[in-house]
Amino acid sequence: MKFRKGPLFFGLIACLVSFNAFSQPADNPDQPKKKPLSAKEIEPKSDFGIQPMYQFYSLKDSGSFNKIFHQTYISPVMVAFGSYPIRNLGINLNAGYAQVKGTTIAEGSTAGSSGETVKLTVVPIQLEATYRFDFFNEQFLVPVLGLGGDYWYFKEV
Image (cartoon, rainbow, N blue to C red):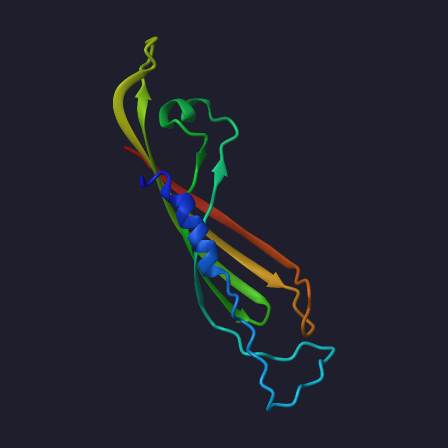
């Protein structure tokens, strides 16, 4: 399998791995059941987490990019580091990597490609803060409000 087709496969695997289907403990018949409280009980939470990510960015005006790299998107593979230092307030730092290869366009030529290979390397770094509106036991929907920014380092060789 080529690497260009690999990120889609990696993204599918990352989604499956990060899906935590076993987060609820099994019911123990020996323990009495507690009545649900109206306010959220304090529960133990992890202080730190790591999550694989796959992102897909479609380029709106991809004329030259498509001629050089023969695609209209860039898809970095990322790793997310997150923490909840205060209840319901999360801080996430995401870092990624993507590299695409192509051939340069010959200036003033009708042939199109000059045959010279070029690589574009992209390293996106994102920092965000999120607030979870998680206040009641067994809350069905938990809205999340997030704010952040990102910096993209890119290099063409």
